[in-house]
Length: 268
Image (tube, rainbow, N blue to C red; front, side, top):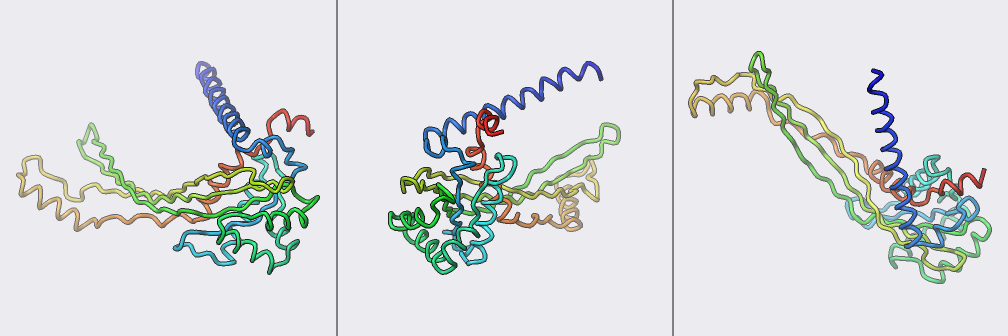
């Protein structure tokens, strides 16, 4: 046990270094793509969540769905993992604008494919002192895929073969997030991200009737057909919830926004 400890320490150190490098790379990318957002103190220059709409017909775009997605992005970006940023929730934005104007704003954003100067000017006025940035999102693609893999293991003593089939249902959701700087009333960051989630289930596909090593082609075929009849084809697991892949997509954005270690220390 004593010899294994140094190796474990080296592995943990390597993982920590990789995480640090990844974080640095994303901060560097944010500096290039959105310097105003990267250099802002997001504890002061708060981010308001305008909302999330859907461009995917199969998902629909109901008011209740928008509320769930908009609440989700605010909750994910405001987590401790990303420095507990004091996000202004979509609910606060809606209360400030009023439900009718808020709904019209999201409809206009979806129809126009962005925010024009008139909308940004109004948001600058009503959110002055409450938030500097405002984020809009639209779900652009939602893809569901199915896959399977087989593994055979032969017992060295009994020579019996165990067959396992893993059935997987995966979901990939693409989201485009646009952050506007209300101080300049300009687009600060246009970022496309995606999140994935999957469910897998293993099935024992071992033969109920074992093949005879001496059986011919026809005999083997009959045995395989009988085994297939006894063990019907396994089913794929249920499709993962949309909210899970969306949450992972929003987390990918949170990594960019997480304050640097130096800024976190200065803010103590």
